[in-house]
Length: 172
Length: 246
Image (cartoon, rainbow over all chains, first blue to last red; front, top):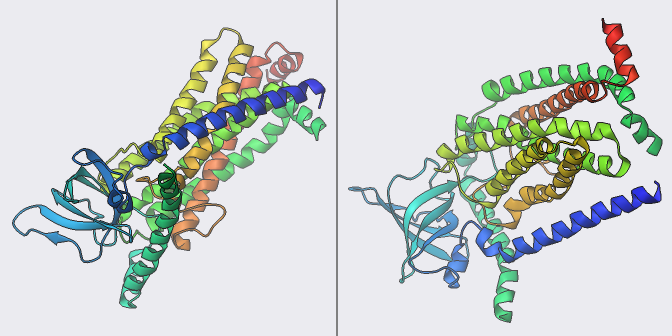
């Protein structure tokens, strides 16, 4: 490589790294806004504002869905396996909505701690499975255990994600 | 190694070698995409939750892979052009951009179509979807920049710089689902880890991904060849070639 080319290469690398640092710092500063939703842990910690439209996300707690047979009203609990959030919703739920499913709910947090949802979105996980496999799992009695293993894993992940933020808050 | 780059950088040499390589990639693309789409759309089992709508993965994932790979290729070509002044790299980068934009659009559109039955919404301003939309704008920016200059050299430099800086968006797209809470799920299909689906679902996807890549290589070779003829039309070897053809 001639010195001139080497110099050019360094200029380019320098330019790109500076731009990357700038973008990285911006994204880091905006991380709370980039996160699509508050997890129940964050809501329990008082990070989410009351009576303003927010999004909350987590998993629909097993056995928590209560439907009103006379209307579209439904109540369920969204959990991240650390804290729970009670959600009240009136409307049509997405096809994928069921217990153990990841959801994102859009709505207003009420003073007494429950969320009045305007919209419920299902969140699909990265696992794909043919129906026969799912059925076989269920028949073999694996499904609930499977969920628990998954639940523990998600809980652990959320906890480790939570720690840096908590440390920051303590410093403040 | 440097001599190889310079050899590859000679338009005449590139024109010759690409003529020999191109048919293989066209055949590979046709066979792989035909096999992959029939297998994926007709024979692969449906998903237990999403039913048949999951089959969009066989278009969505390869298109999203290509959208990102093409941008990285454009950035690499930009560096090669800026540092070594190799014109073929710039021609290839110019020819890749529209395909990259098209693939980004296909990924966004197929994702939206899948989102309606699965999520309950076709669009959400989450980190993955937004960064992918930014990628589409970056592609459009690169294409527009090339058209905005009267001097070809200035256009090439400007487009190269935008591609090199814009490549910062690629890791953001890739890791957005891990860094932030998003509606989009983490990757089901990566080169490094075991796929989160059984083989009979995963194999057609792999075939489709390889088919899309072959298509990209074949199309880029073909378009770069015609771009070489266009830009080098005053050179002697091109004129001789034209005489031979006649």
